[in-house]
Length: 249
Image 1 (cartoon, rainbow, N blue to C red):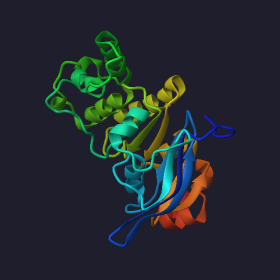
Image 2: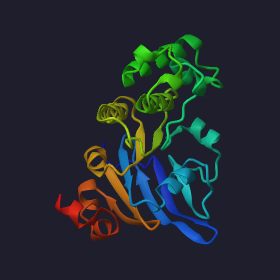
Image 3: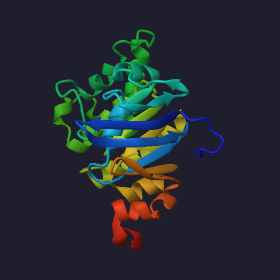
C-alpha cells in the first residue's frame, strides 16, 4: 500500500478557501495513492471538514485544483463525483431511517440500470455480512444503534465499489467494538477491492496504525505530510495540535 512509484489517485493541489474573509483552508496540497489510507488530523477548526467538502464537491475552492486519476474534478457536483468513484461518510451517520437496512443499500443503485436486481441484492447481503449487520437486514434503520447506523452508512458507500472513500470522524463516539469493525473493514476493502480512504479523525493512535500517509492541518495550512510516525514528531504538529504530553506518550 505504499505510495512509492504509484500514480496519485487523488491530488489536492494548492487548495484555498475563505468564508467572509476568514481563511479556512490555505494552499493545501497532498496526494492519495491507489490502495492506500491517508489520515487527516488537526485541531478543531483547522479546515479538515472544509477540505473534505471541497474534495467532495459540496464547496468550490477559491483557488487550487482537485484531480482524480489525473482528471480535473474541481467544482464538480457531489453526484457527478459519486459516479466517478468518490464516496463520503459524515460526522453524524446518514441513513434512510424509514427504510430497512437492506433497502438502504439499494439507494445508490437506483440509477445504475446495468446492475441487475439479483446482483444488487447479492452485493447488499455480502456487505451486510461484511460489516456484521446481516442479522438486522429486515429491521428499519431507525431501530439500529448509533454505531450500527455508522456501519450501515459505511456499507452503503461500498455498494458501488468506489475508488476513494472520504470519512469524517468515523470513530467518534462509537463503541470500541464498532470502531474495531470499521478499522478491519477499511483495511480489508483496501486489500480486496483496491479502494483508497481519506480519513479525518482525532483518534491519532488508530490513524497512525492504519494510515500509509498522514497530513496534519493547523490553522488551515499543512503543518506536515508524510509517514505517520514522522508527522506526529514534527514540531509544528506537536505545538499546533498534539501537545507535549502526547509526544511523551
